[in-house]
Image (tube, rainbow, N blue to C red; front, side, top):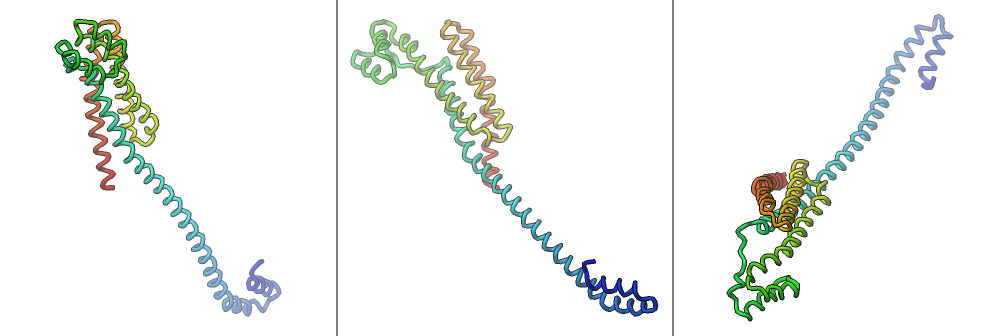
Length: 237
């Protein structure tokens, strides 16, 4: 036995016989103090263990909350930029695919004005020369400039796609899913337009515009609404 008081009383009782009553009185007198001391010691140990567990739990909760806050702060940073890139991509592809594109009237330009206009375009020198040599300058310009505009819009959509892929981990799941869907739809619309242009197939070109009208624009409006709602939630967090 580790406790000297208990060992003393037990030994006394074993050796006692008639002294058992005396031993009982000793145990009653000393044992009460021992029990109180033992209880106080165990209570103190229990409180110490509880304090350690509470402190460890607090550290764990603080670490979790800090992680959540960091993710939410990152989300607050990336969502506006993703929406900006999406806005840019949708507007550019709508302009490219629109059948109501505004083009300068090159057919009625004088030589100096035509040269000034061509100098401000990304056209190659051979393309500019082909415009100079044809009578239908406006039509020729529209044909040549299309491929430059297509490549520009492709780069804009690629920027959006890469940003979503690189930062999608910080998007809420539903918003990330919608972004992935609209990126795919934008790519498909561009492919339809490019194939239609190459094959001179108006029907295929028209399908690209239908996709813009019926799929991309409604999805864009939904994403814009969801992102604004999410950002407002951050503001009152």
